[in-house]
Length: 178
Image (cartoon, rainbow, N blue to C red; front, side, top):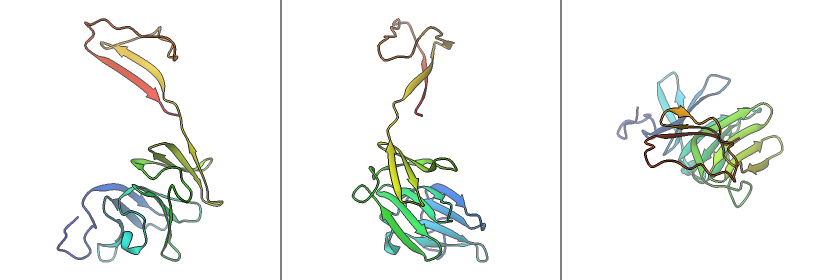
C-alpha cells in the first residue's frame, strides 16, 4: 500500500505492472518507481531516476533469458541488471525508435524476444545482441457489426467504402494490429 509517511511502503499508488522473477521476487512498476517486495518485512525497496533510471514511470516489466529486468517507460526502455544492481537506459538517441511506451503492452516471446508496444509500433528487443527493431503494423479490420448484426459482405480492403444509413444507431468494429 502506498503511504508517503510510512517508510517501506509502495513507492507510488498507481500500479502499472506486476512481475515475478524465476527466484520468486515480486517487482511492481508504478507511475513513480520500480518497487521490489521484501518478503521478510513485507515492505518495498524503491528504485527511480535517482538510482539511474531514465524515467521512474514504469509501463511494463519483463525479464530476459539472463534474468535481467526490462522496463518500458515514458522515456525509453530500461534494463536492470539484477546481478550488479545496475541500470542501462535505451532511448531514441541510443537504440530504440521510440521513447513513449504503452501501459500493459509487453510480451516475452521465446521465438521473438521481448516485445514492447510503443507510440510507433512494436519494439522488439534481442537482449543477447542488444538489437532493437521497431515494426509498424497497419491495423486490419476483421469484423463489422451494424446495429448488432454482423456485416458479412464487407471485404475489409482499403478501396471499398462502407456506406451507412442515417438510421444506424450502433457500429462495432473489430481490428487486429499484428
